[in-house]
Image (cartoon, rainbow, N blue to C red):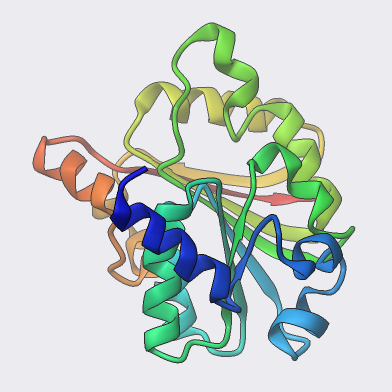
Length: 219
């Protein structure tokens, strides 16, 4: 392991806004995010596979009356968003370092108000279908932790993942109000993203790809 990555991991160990294995909060946070982490009763919004947490931090700046949790397994990536949040005194930001398939071990029933999936790994191999974040096993997990009627959002440059997600959501009996566009930057939905772009999105745009976007409610 390089020295730079090691120093980032040490920073994560000391930061209150990072919840990861080895910290007492890691074992006790389920059902207590507002009480223990944020010290308020505001809505909780998740960014799954958050990487550097561009949406987690960007939304937190704009919406101080909501709590934002970025979830990813990559500690060196989480470090970036954690540092920005700490430097800017954003007390409505936290990062959870876990594999997303274990999400329901860290959030209680009806504890979450909204979920954003921002450029997740498309998992193009058929053998990896069960690892796509819009696979039915994940949709059922989201349903368990979300309040009824909450929104789930997907933003991706990958046409295959987008098509797969649309069909999967259409077939999912607890999903409603599905809406989608194949070019976010030429749609009215762009304003909802507050001008936030991830590094991967900028690369895709520079290569001439369009950014796809969908949202639906979980019932």
